Image (cartoon, rainbow, N blue to C red; front, side):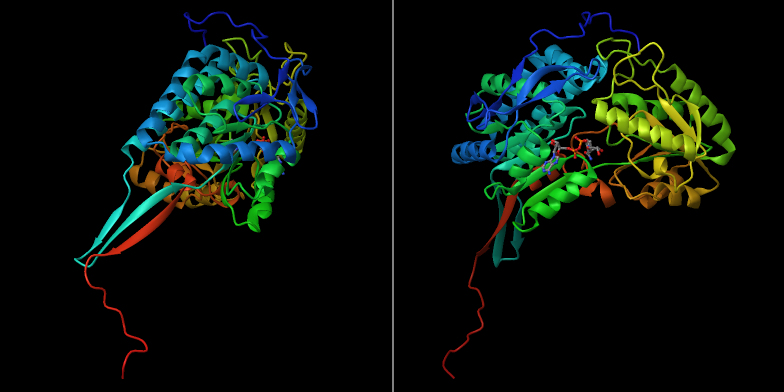
Length: 504
Ligand code: NAD
């Protein structure tokens, strides 16, 4: 990827890096009640550059109170007024675009060019939901001459939003925008490995005129700050994006209070390539789909299933391309794969690579690139001849590692595609129109792309089946999630009522 000529050079350590990241509660930057904080490191040097406030239930309590206080006025605003504020948030994000991308890239290890794309998408999320609520209409049902039924939507209440470290700011915006559009105040708990970009929200929200207390941010460790938010009795709704293990735990924790939950969880998405496909396009798509965003992408096409007649050739070309992917510092505009987010995650991905060496045939990568002696770097890694029982076929690795396997016919392709606990995305490559639809319908996943990588219009439902999640967000589904629908039945004439206990 050549650097765009108009982009300024990017320094490894961005200007304006804070040394301390406080919570944001009731419109104020505040420390934890306990005064505790935790260190935050960048994934290139793995040395702490800042301390972030470590929240627990006392900080969550303050944040929920602030949100409750702000709720009535925010819910009462007209949709047009809320939309205006949402558009101003988008403006404020856009005016900080470069800083936001640099912070994100520095903190998470995402290549700077890809972090810029994520920053643009974050602004778009607000513009989109501003449009949605202005255009929103509520349903009405006429029942002949006798009844009129209509739906009233009201915001659910204080929303608890919990987000992961991959593309953190974009995923935060994905939840903030529909929650705010729906009239919910909220408490956000960003991922502890990547709190830096979230430190930009307070200025963005203040500049946009979001009233104090409508958005509250509590930093901290998942088991402390996150769990306190999940358990809080005045938070009726939890929107969670993260691992399946944590998602299951949260669903169990919320069961007693019967909270509304949305779970966007892990994936192990198949790419099914039939021999009649446009092979060059499929190859580009596979390489981008699994190695972009450092492979730390929930919808990564991390299992590539190839029709046997094409298999050897495709596998060889994939290995060749993986070898040529540019791994480098996240701040370098030429970098295609940057540094993995955290040494703990890096060690976990390397463990999978070691497992893969025993389970399958390594044909590319598998080691740190020689020119990068430090930092969490891994050369894009390709395993072929991967059996369906292998751990690298079954488990989400969440790094630049792909498992490749052959299939003989359509039935086997579908069987292999469905042979994991996950069901987030699937990608199908064929020029046979009927087969494309047939396989798309047979694959167990919440989303399918035919002859494309993950290109998503914001109106479409997003989410997974099986171990990949519960519920759908995106488009109208998000508004459904953050609002309660009440149906009002109105009699328009005399209602026939059977007369109980009347005169004989
Ligand atoms: P994670 O589950 O470890 O953490 C996610 C968030 O949950 C963090 O903010 C963490 O602090 C918090 N958390 C942890 N324990 C908690 C608890 N007991 N109570 C409340 N909150 C708690 O996930 P991660 O490692 O940060 O993210 C990677 C995972 O996210 C991958 O599995 C990936 O597939 C998934 N993901 C899914 C989607 C999707 O839309 N389906 C999108 C992005 C990432």
